[in-house]
Length: 143
Image 1 (cartoon, rainbow, N blue to C red):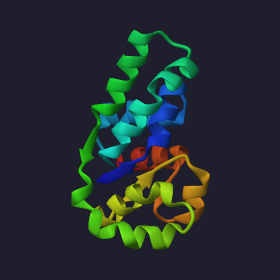
Image 2 (cartoon, rainbow, N blue to C red):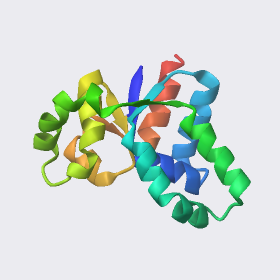
Image 3 (cartoon, rainbow, N blue to C red):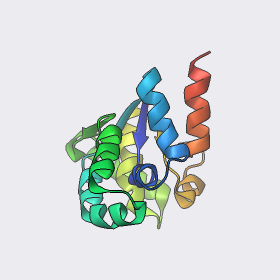
């Protein structure tokens, strides 16, 4: 099952060992979800990397270890693979267009999105799974 991961849950995973991190930890053991993301997520992460590391209050080695642990579970998809869904995503999101690429990719793959962004969830309640819902989905797949 494909799930689009947005930058919000990656950052959250790096800042705390909460539900977002637990999703990736559980999935690394069970391999139930194939996470995908637009390539630009890497650009976003790189742009804020030093700020995230500082907020995480962990040393560089541990930060890099956690980042690599999460990133290894994600396949990054070039924009060209889902550009045909950008206009539809923009129409759905309205003013919340910062999430456009995530939604476009999810529309292309006909899958859901893993995000802790409340505004994104409000814009697409049936498409977006928050961290608690994502944990439940992975655990449900065990049955």
